[in-house]
Image: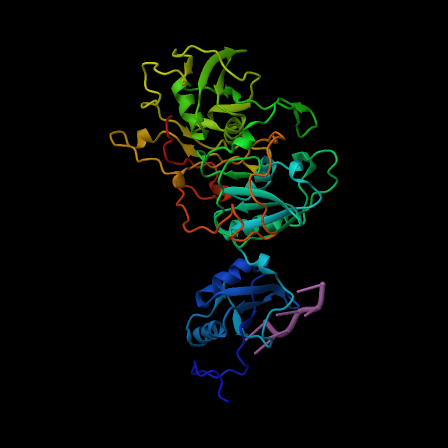
Length: 461
DNA sequence: AGCACA
């Protein structure tokens, strides 16, 4: 019988869906293999770093003809297959499939499935997860759930490379004690694989799911009623109870911080009800009131340690106020009450332009804070109608520069149906995306962190 | 530069 009629080249080996690659560069990653091979077909499995020198790998295509097309291409190409500039030699494997290698969870993707062993859902807050995983890039979304396998989280990055980095660094590791974890948690090893999802469909901001790309996503009512219960900080000391009112201390205030400026900044996370600015101990502080604790928590985590203006000016330090409802003048130069019907002014500060940029400072460079959200596009389009708000283009990236560690209150029940250990598209709240929103920002390499960013304007309420 | 079960 003649060998698969396709190429006019003769091969010493019988074709296989599996290709054997040699002379690979040191520590060749799966992504590099995939980059090389995916133009020829769908890769269903890989096996890296095999052979005596760990410089060989196997790639399995979904279809035989895809493997044949790759062999054929490089047989006739003047350019050899290369990875990092190194010529890679490819031939059919003498096996027909890669066995006992990866489950589907090893097929790289931009969404990680993280199983946190030895903990229950309440033990590790979404803030902690966000903090840990933000060390590797901008985390778009997080969904957590409890399964037979234990407490799990889906963590969405922009791309598979970032997800892989996070996985490589964290798989099998524990969340550092430093990051909190209740006393009774003795171990919390992370088991990380890749989800088949590319875009999580987060319906609400809640104690178990978060969409960091869309600050206007409604807050799940079940997550709002967090009781004001004290929580432990990383050092075991009591932190202030959560509150819907944030206390902001403004450091290095080289520029005036007005009520309008604060309103613009804090409106990115939800409706700001009231603002009061005052002096204390020679510094400027402000109280910002949201309708609920969750919004305040999101704002606090996102803004903590970041600067209102580029260059390290007007750096924000946030804590929870003991207040829950401010009693402020409806309209003065130091306060505003946006809940009263008519203050005679526009709520939207048309003139102010505020850019949040990263401070770039951080004790732990891996958890470097990079908050970027331009909430002052008026300056960029001074005489133009602002583009209408598009939630798909909401820009707000936060990477906890400091330890957030504010779990939600215990009241909320599971708002979503449980899904399978490896959630599928039918799992209710998680669906494969039909579209990938175009974000103005991408998770940026460490070197690029801190670069100013122009985003979309907030909606004014 | 030459075929992997962990």
